[in-house]
Picture 1 (cartoon, rainbow, N blue to C red):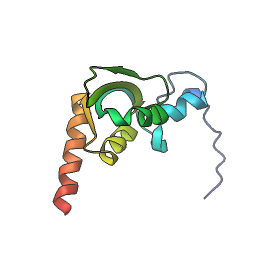
Picture 2 (picture 1 turned 60 degrees about the vertical axis):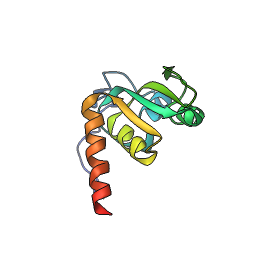
Picture 3 (picture 1 turned 135 degrees about the horizontal axis):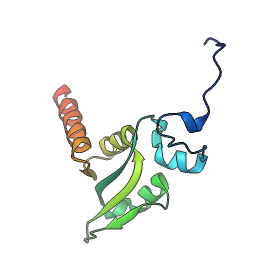
Picture 4 (picture 1 turned 90 degrees about the vertical axis):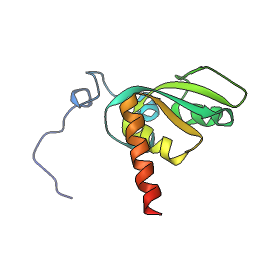
Length: 117
């Protein structure tokens, strides 16, 4: 570690803060695993048994839709890197639906992981 003479940047000026001051509770919900990248609305499909886990992880500001006996679709605003980690950690019980780009990135990373075995 090295102490710098450079002044700290206020949170609201950081990329992704959207000019807003730090709301720690909101930040923690959007940045599971504490990854730092862009936030996005992500739609993903989970097994119904994970509903309480999703609420624990993403908070109450999630939307559930398209429920069946086995699955439910979730829409949440979340940090993209954290969402990728969440989807990979809980695969195959979590599948990203949108954005398509994020879905393809997770698929590629899971294929690479499978190839390692």
